[in-house]
Image (cartoon, rainbow, N blue to C red; front, side, top):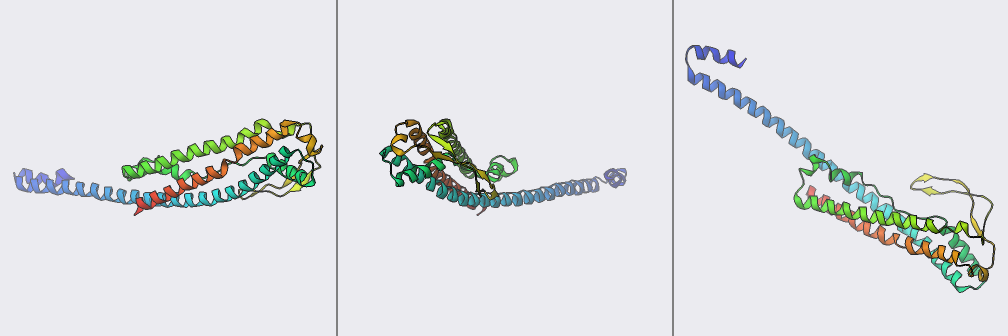
Length: 249
């Protein structure tokens, strides 16, 4: 098509017209490429804005979840601590017996921290999104992601370690009859028949066998880290929100 357009001019040796036609064609191709690039840039910018919104929404959701975990964990930590002190007293009273039984129900399970990370993973790994971030923004997002991964590893360790010293193997404990239990686990109903551990000896005999005492101690030592881990995670989430706001500003 281009050749047909300039052929008559070449035949007439009208080189000026040939040049004009050539410039028009090149300019048209150039403008077409530019328009395409502009459209792609607009699409990329919109994708980046949506990614920043997802990061903020995810961080706010995690902050709420971490708050709930902290409250639930703190109640159990207090319960186990009171049971531990009751065991250490070696005094058989109804109060101490109740505190130990209540604490025993807590050491039978552990808490961990679950957070959503899809949005922060996306914005720190997608080439398209990374290309639109300044060096400081990229650094801030990456630092927060790294800190969260360290804190999550610590929380997982705090969950797993108490299982190495389980109270179920203690001969001073027995298993109760099943009782229906309604449990809400991260919005999911986990209702089931539940068996509980129960004491078979008075407190002044229980304290003579240090295995139960150490089960309480191990649980309390490591699970008591969770509120601090959750608080530090919330700090990182707020940093992510500030960084995302700066990036979108």
